[in-house]
Length: 508
Image (cartoon, rainbow, N blue to C red; front, top):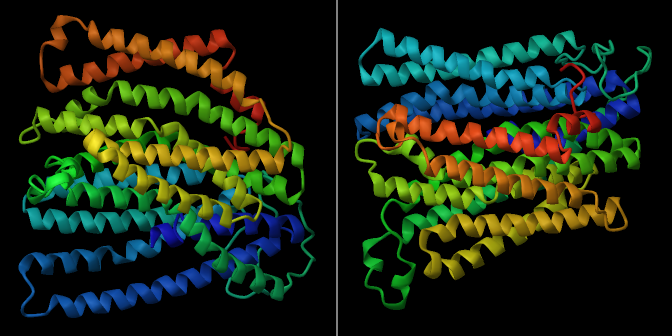
């Protein structure tokens, strides 16, 4: 539900339409579209929540239900309202991005995590019973969602966007620090038929958008299913099919590698896409082709400057990171090595997945929801074919590698489509940046590798938590310093790129 109604299909379909309405009809009309969408989502999710609570309550009192499953029902009943809260918060934040304000949406996840951490500490401090702790953490999750929505609503009320039930009652005050849209006089009436039509269109468009956004999840699901299925002992003596057999623990290692791979994507790529998406939409709506081209080029330049060294660094530090985070108790050296292998496989595609997040938003901003979906389906087919072809040769490493190669193919095809539509001729704007970034990343990797290989004996020979942490932090710091120095010498400061592209949010 979060991927459908939260930071997924609905918000991605909503934001371009919100910006278009605000540009064409003014701020008041955009408020009405937001209100209509929000009310529909609120009613739908409320109905789903109530129905789910009733079903779970009935299941809980089944006499044949085990104690464990009864606890699962209790936890699901407690946390079900969080679905409604997080989806509404995502819609609020999308509208806030649409008027050029990014600070509050960026801070809300931090606020949520702080609430969770404080709540977890209080729960652990006040009780020692495991079941009570689990129930307490479930309550903390819901409380965090309530605080997140409250913070978003309060900020939005001050920006002149409020949830209204009637089209006749709206707040048409222009927002502070207006980001992109033209201001409209308060006296302009909001056409109710336009509001209904635009709202209906948002709910129609979100389905192909959701399909396009779900490609990586589909590939991940296929890879996980293969990792689980091919680890069965019966495949060891299955003739030619035994070449597909994977060692036990491959599925868990693949999952951990996927989670670590999401870190650079969330820190950089998602944040950059959040800032660029409303800009793409605004320039597409005003037909400012030149500014749209500049934003596309600078966005992809930033992907190169950050994504390529992030991929190289994660590849280089895969084993130390795996040891630091996971190699404890029953998670032995062999399991850590297998996890590091999966981290390396996913790390190779950081730049490609980051670029896809940007390029796909170009299509959505220009009212094309089907190209990402079409190319994504091609990517799913490529991933499955590569899985089958590479598994006998590379073993478990083939699973993340196939996903990376498929994503790279999708990124190349999508970038070529963007070039054809918006640039007409072959653009060489990325080549000088790409060349210098690759050279700087190679020097950075060499420096980090030398630091890792020639670490002082007083911490490389030991195997405590502090020593493992040093083996991650020290090469990371050296690599970052070397890369920053190389970028400066090459004339590629990330801060300079941000300013030259005017990507900093208005209220930063």
